[in-house]
Length: 211
Ligand code: URA
Image (tube, rainbow, N blue to C red; front, side):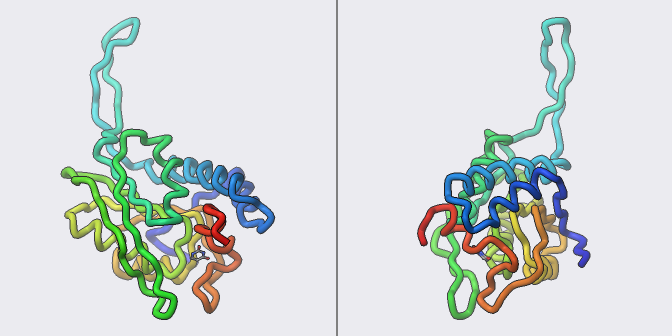
């Protein structure tokens, strides 16, 4: 399956860490640590095309011009609650980014997203927004998040997920072909309850030990 907006970040370390995360015997401490580590590896790829600005500095030897990322123009939007598990990983590499919170739950009958909280920082011109959610399943929550961010006039939107289902990627691509998605794995499909197969179960429950 080929999706033009999707990058599956292929790396032996990601595969290794993901296999431990998928294992049902892996507990919350290790699960959280691994999600943070994989998020760091995904961030490395997902930030590859960020613009840099020239900055004049003094080395101990002479004046030179270096390049820097304007990390104050970057906002991370973790979709509550499982998205919180990816926040520290991306923040560790982009420490001055702002955080915009979006609380969405999935209606158990319609499977459609229902918003219960939104708090975004001000967005500057040419702002970059990274929407993070470990499980891109139906894609409805992420599609909703993209719509919300676009309402604030943001044009540069990047999605990062740990696992993705083809159904969800297609769903997002249809409406938002301009949004690039970075994931650690494109899994097989969704089951009847919209869980990713083979997946890793409920990411929120595994992160926060709520089951
Ligand atoms: N959300 C999860 O936590 N897991 C899935 O498999 C799908 C959605």
